[in-house]
Image 1 (cartoon, helix red, strand yellow):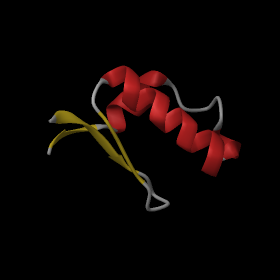
Image 2: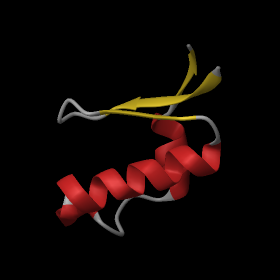
Image 3: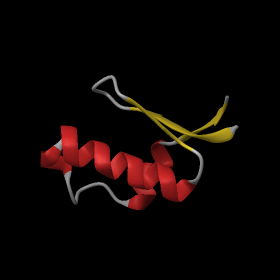
Image 4: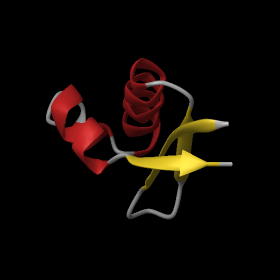
Length: 55
């Protein structure tokens, strides 16, 4: 499966199959674990952090 992965500084690894899914997953992670960042990270920021994953 090709998809996207982001390794958060807190240690959480967020994986998803599409751009829309990685954005949604990171937004959920931010809301749950980093509420001080809600609304401060754009879709473009998230996609810039994402790496393509082959697994």
